[in-house]
Image 1: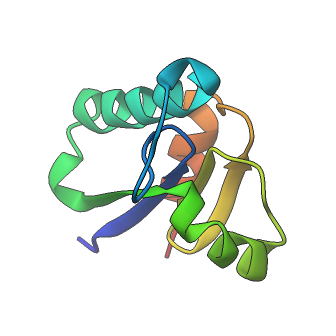
Image 2: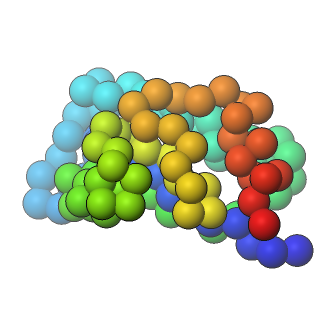
Length: 100
């Protein structure tokens, strides 16, 4: 089976030379935890490459690719699934199933 790629651009945590406190964006941690729980619950951890990038260093890439600026951003197999919100589990699963 083809390996999926999930990229999350997170606003909190280590951002290169500085640190953003977690309480500044609770959605970032909620999204990361949700994605990890989905992968574990459905037993597809080995089929997915999960990449978590610091938003402050990478914000230009989703801005250019998707005209999206608000973190957290969830990209599954090169398609923007959500930005600024935590999507429902069904939306994430649909994005994974709909991928080629």
